[in-house]
Image (cartoon, rainbow, N blue to C red; front, side, top):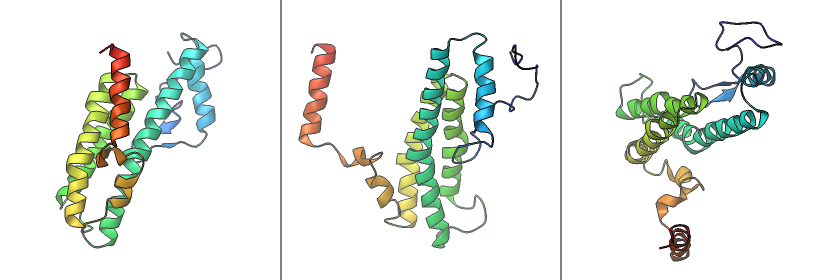
Length: 184
């Protein structure tokens, strides 16, 4: 699959990858435009342009959602905990360090890699579901226990405002939406 009319075969699986999904926060690699164009050339051997464009739109949307909603906020909270002396410099000697590692390294990477490899179960159920569950039910409470108030700014963001509950108007909008959608 790596050879095209314009490219020779390669066994370097990372040669045409435009993002790195390994760190806490994903980012585009050096020469990402050239790498992406080479990968899209490979894709175009079998897929239509619209399919390729839609894939990259979903892929980038997933990476951006993960970065902005979970990775950057969690990283910021961890940095504040370290800076305040609530955590030692010894890796993995506090529970929250293990929780954080699971959040980004296992669950977060599954969500990002699931999208990259078009595996919806890994993106959603083994990825974002577990990221969300760990973030809200373990990471945030553990951070608050260590340093009350450290998560306040994060939880006020548009991504997490839903945890504060819905207004009566928002509840009514949802009821109307589902009545119309399901004729009930």
